[in-house]
Image (cartoon, rainbow, N blue to C red; front, side, top):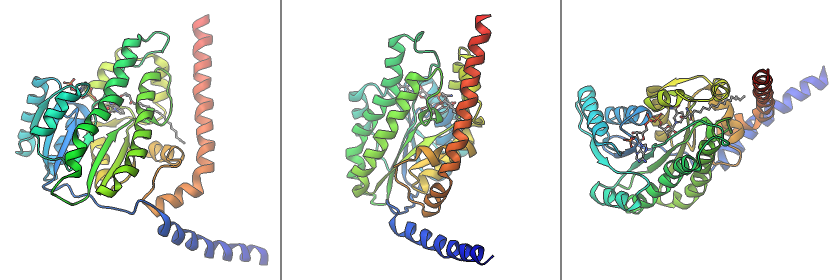
Length: 324
Ligand SMILES: NC(=O)C1=CN([C@@H]2O[C@H](COP(=O)(O)OP(=O)(O)OC[C@H]3O[C@@H](n4cnc5c(N)ncnc54)[C@H](OP(=O)(O)O)[C@@H]3O)[C@@H](O)[C@H]2O)C=CC1
Ligand SMILES: CCCCCCCCCCCCCCCC(=O)[C@@H](N)CO
């Protein structure tokens, strides 16, 4: 009994001490990024998650610009946002693979306060079947396209006259935290964003620019409808381990993540668990989350091992059935 109460006394003293320590050491320091009257620039803003983000940013009182290739889809998006919010967004037609075109857009547009690099392509297919052309397309649009955007817009962001904190948010995917069957190219492109984001945050913190990396699960968008037409069944089975979301729900999580300056932005419960492990060495501004990560990492790792067990069982079953 005495030993037990001694233990609980120690725990009672240690926990607040640990919280205090974490609150002192977490870096970067917490930050708030206001959106009202700021210029929010969203790539892939004509469809799906990007369009939902444009709606929400406009409703928050931001000046919004959207970029995509198709003029027709941009126009349609602009009309839809005007109808819903009464606000006019600026539209820019360009391909993120074309750096010179992006530089011209950056010159034409006002300096950006919040850049959401959200464009993306996804074709789920086993690598043995996927053409290298498609692999290169996925890496080019999702990863190199993100570099192009940042290179084109960062100089003006650094020189902005609005000296309030600014943000660069990158749209990853839970397939950027876990490699998933059918997503060799896609997962590689999204894992690449994590290295980009972590290194970039260290480079631009002095300019008061804050990086967010968003990790949605399957999200109901025109892109997903297209993808589902040819998605390997095992991709769908494994992806179903995390609940599906609506584009507007992901947009809400993203906007809140940006405003609170969160580096890692999970979108659902599974996403929070994944973030605890895959956040690894990435920055954490919240001492409460840092505390949660410290005390729960071991047990979450166990849960993930169970997921791997179930995924590899599905893969085994699939192969044994297709052999019959
Ligand atoms: N839907 C999902 O299940 C999930 C999506 N994500 C990620 O969220 C992001 C948005 O996805 P989602 O809303 O589903 O996608 P959609 O396919 O619905 O929309 C994609 C947008 O990106 C634009 N785009 C595509 N290629 C280029 C290009 N080369 N240059 C400029 N713009 C381009 C498209 O316009 P246009 O074709 O006219 O250029 C469109 O506006 C992507 O990064 C995706 O990887 C992450 C997790 C889950
Ligand atoms: C204890 C820890 C919990 C673990 C749960 C793990 C769940 C992993 C599921 C990964 C889902 C990947 C969806 C990709 C969506 C996407 O990007 C495509 N639709 C393309 O757009």
